[in-house]
Image 1 (cartoon, one colour):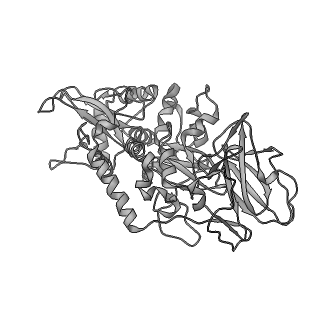
Image 2 (tube, helix red, strand yellow):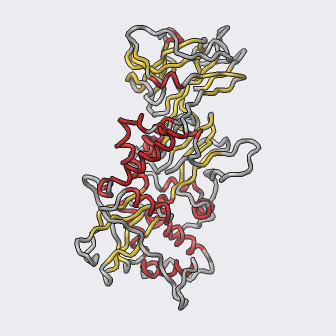
Image 3 (cartoon, rainbow, N blue to C red):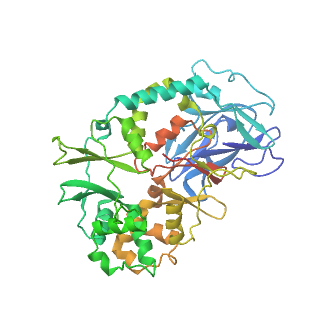
Length: 478
């Protein structure tokens, strides 16, 4: 919610009365029809909320409110709802959201207003006191001591050191592995049909797993096909094996041994009895997305079994699952993400240092997107309009959509736009609303706990997106 002082203007409930301000209310959880009502209008009117341009799952409404304490509630698709990610209380109207608007911009209340006896105030309400000055919304952000930070780190370290990779294994699921002698073209189609972005590689002659084929490999292959000086043609993909590609990739990366022979990268893997701290360090230190969990009952490692593909998102879910009901033992989880060095942010005015936030327009070429994914070393790119409002994201794994109807055989990467590439990945059986769930929206004032919770939602591409008013401003990733 954002407030601004206005002398004139229009809002959902009519004109702006004297002594009131306009407040923007936001419902970020989707729906077909979203309305809002509250104590600011006497609970007597349902105000329609409109989708935010570029964010079809986010609804907003501008309402006139007076200073003081307000309760409000949303009416979504015929059902009363409240936003559990904002301050809320139990009242005579059930669970409702709360808003404290000071009597004046310099007023700094130390406690909430007087409440009815049957209202149970959420503790978070006291930490989210709003101040409005010159039309700018500021929040009193919680802080913690260095001792609390160190205590949080210690507890997480102890947890990771005492839990094994077995904790990452799902109750049921599937893993896909590819033979290194499989043609690259066939492997491309298998990953697309199975709906997985990568797969471990099995070498039958050696009887072991030797590597991983990922979406990045296909990005590099398509770039190589588009290179007029390349020795790799589309017809050769029918016979060019994964093993041959990996060897060629080693030449491209100038990975040679003492005799000048190409050396492929060794497989980074872990065992089911390795602790989660070891697994996380292998992922981070080797700059890989996943680590295969492989088990062998033999001392020599023969007859290995592929159990799972471990990732940082899986480890994060374990941490959250363990601490979610005892979050008070980790004070760092209560910090807002804007107060900690998390993610990549749009630089503030006057700032020149720091990692830039990679963004592209939907009209940009697919070639530009692939180059940015490689050179910026990111897993996904926010796609924004001319006003920097978020439209979609393009991920490395989206490249497999080009296997649909063999599109990759008759496109030019410099001519195909990102918008066209994203359309290939849209299943006609599902509306755009479901595709928009690939990423999650959060606010800069949201706690680390809330962001971790949203990373745990199925279907997320390890990305939470932070809007700055109507503009995209940050991309915190795993």
